[in-house]
Amino acid sequence: MDQEQDLHEARLRYALGAVMNSRADSLLDIGCGSGTLLKRAVRQARFRRIVGLEVSGEALAVARRELRDHLHGGEPLELIQGSCLDDPQRLAGFDAAALVETIEHLDPRHLSRLETNLFAHACPGTIVVTTPNREYNVLYGLHQDERRDPDHRFEWDRRRFGAWAHRLARQHGYQVCISGIGEAHPEFGCPTQAARFTRRLVDNAVA
Image 1 (spheres, one colour):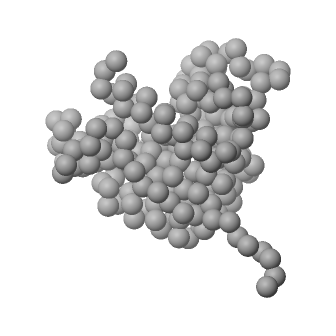
Image 2 (spheres, rainbow, N blue to C red):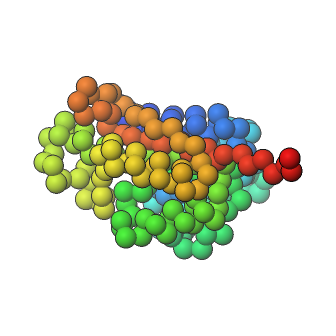
Image 3 (cartoon, helix red, strand yellow):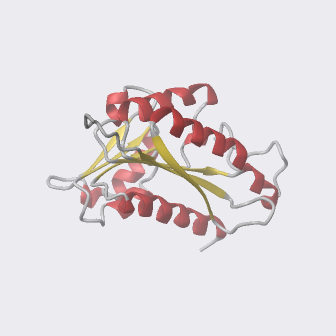
């Protein structure tokens, strides 16, 4: 297993572990791609509903092939082609949402639509986000203005990602825990950065 595959496996373990620790029994995988997180989620008997949302028809076709044994009556899994930027109702009704290496594929001008749809309207109890740490790119031999993938619209350093995550948590009633995934460098941090958002409980009791 090469370094990138090791890192991808670590991301998946982190995301599924965070969701499982939240005791969620429904999961929305936003930008599910070929279904690597979904393949792990369907092995967990606790989930009553698992949905993969993916804009790419090609990637979704791969997911359908990989998960064909779980796409029939009585199974909790559903695959949907669509965008997280569209109807926010599509994102609603889940205990947890995961965005594993997803946000960097969005045009920065559209990121606020995801924020509104997911954090303001859907409001799952747990949201897990992973994204590349731009500072680490130098260790891959990339120049400062280069990105790891040509489809990435942006890559953030740790300060920018942390500021984004803490702003969303503050604005939408979440607690957030920032962490790194992969081998840490003393100066540049980890190759992947992650945020686990947990919705604050509101006490509506009358004093």
